[in-house]
Length: 528
Ligand SMILES: *[C@@H]1O[C@H](CO)[C@@H](O)[C@H](O)[C@H]1NC(C)=O
Ligand SMILES: *[C@@H]1O[C@H](CO)[C@@H](O)[C@H](O)[C@H]1NC(C)=O
Image (cartoon, rainbow, N blue to C red):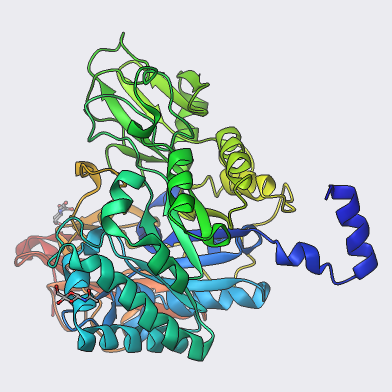
């Protein structure tokens, strides 16, 4: 049916059910730790543009040893102890778009596989998991749950091959309970066939989920000894003599999942809103599959070498001189500058990928992740990549939509900044990306505020209950009336009330309210 007929049909039937039935999904993952990024990298719930997503996924919660779903960052997720209350704010976005669906994701790269392997193997722990997941979803108003177990029978899995059937069993049991509440269930999965074959029983588990979010990215990265594309559509330059099946590509992954029996109308194509960076061994040998010696440039906000947000990279492209190239076989761009080599996606490569994928009649597209699109529109218009996705999926996309009708007040005057958490991406390759692995950052080493240029060094934050909001005499830094060793950062909360966050100076340093630093006790002049 062509567009004109469709249009006529819509007018005639009024309900437009034909179109509605075929509406493509745009699944937007949100890496919630972007709230802690500084300056223009900071992305809180209020920055989400609900016009550009049909599904929003909040990442990540974790599980404890009993399989119970837990918040990994209670201060961020929950309202307790003057927390940011983001679970609630995230779901409040639906006020502005009743058709929007929200899901809560468990797992992710940093959670590893071990706990999930143990949980899925035990009827009791599975029950704990399912019961607590539903409880959390219902309590905060999510519409569903997304499982990012990375990976069954992979990485640090405890039970190995048994994970494969246990994963299916877990989803089967979840489906039964979720149906009682009308909840959505999806899973994020490793895309490449050669890897997915050892992680999943595809026809078995896919019957229990609503969507399969295919992580068609991280195909090549700084863990490889030669340059390669993050998410090539096809086999590209430099691989002319390699068999098609021996190269990780988006196209091959799609084909594999469909051939294995994943229903097309559940399959969601993952699109990376970030690039992968390499350092060339020799600046003069700079094509695809050129020798590389490790991770390349990092962005100012995601601060992870080997990885760069599109928002970070587009600014560099705009202000620096780069040699922009296009791999006409793989259908993706890359950029070279001296020994720097960056693989990324732009609006054009995204359009080409989606157009190709649509011939398989898949459900739509997924992004990892919304906070690295150019959401402030620093390079061109705002959300250029997410808009390209909407456009390629045939959705209306206005050129200038204001960032999310805000339900929430963001604190713009004072920001407590932690050491940025590593970009939590997942690899579909067998080799592990050393650059994005493991480390969960501990306590913030430093607090800064945008109202003063003096950082308080050598302090650690706690989110312990502050005695009373009366400690907030002013926005920003305040002394702790009960202790010289600690201080408060007071942030304007959602209701115009200053919300205190308590920080502790390291060792026996004292808070110095005059210089706004943790200082030696004899210089800090604390009179408590
Ligand atoms: C799940 O894993 C456990 C531990 O290896 C195993 O005993 C059990 O049979 C597995 N269940 C299924 C359904 O495969
Ligand atoms: C510590 O206090 C002294 C005395 O007020 C001051 O001169 C010094 O600059 C302070 N240290 C820092 C790091 O600000």
